[in-house]
Image 1 (tube, protein in one colour):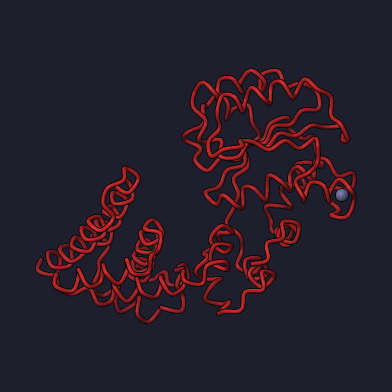
Image 2 (cartoon, rainbow, N blue to C red; image 1 turned 180 degrees about the vertical axis):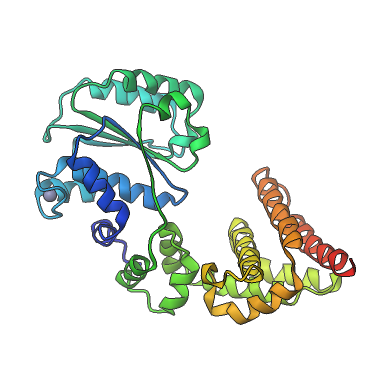
Length: 328
Ligand SMILES: [Zn+2]
């Protein structure tokens, strides 16, 4: 896949969210921003675009040396953290030390802290000091996928911006720009407005296949004797088990939407007819139970339980719910 940061930013510039940012920055900008979304890649792009808007003299022209350096991630006044997965106290210490130095090329210094929800209380409290008395010309951008993990004292000192899902038009252009040569319509649907998913899908063609296999499993789930065979099929795909869980959840949400006559909102539009048939079998109570079980399975996966037994227990549960509820 041909991943070009600047190109994707150019496409995202056509979203309403970007226009909101543009407006915000052209007014009086804040010394601290908190961008919020569960689409991690989208957060990264918007963090980068915000840095452009704050540093480029022509509000993100895309051509000047500042813009070029920001796109390549080599601008000396843009510091991105953490270096590892999670934000550590040392990362915050680096920001504090570095913020005392004057900017090198720009008139501002920008710190982007990715995955800020992973910072523990002591790291967050350390950052609080700098937010309370921000050094001149320093701007801090926090990328947050779970707002609940951020201390209210931090939140209240940031200008908060919730990102919307990416409209299909832009997702389509991003997929096309990646030179993907499969079924683009289908991929736009599977992405469901998530940039992260769109990028994962374009670089992983087996995902579409996996998605179809899971739908077949749901359609043919009729007796406990077939469960084992179906688990084997899923495991042979060597897919990421959390991806499997996500797909199960997505399909059951779609079935529920069909049941509620909200077909317009479903993600897997190419499967509408089959989803409608399934919506006759599964009522909202059953779907609620099943989705709760999927959440539980995801939690169990985090604590390293056996993948086969988790899948087995999920499929058996769906069967059980089906049997119980149909005899009521
Ligand atoms: Zn520029």
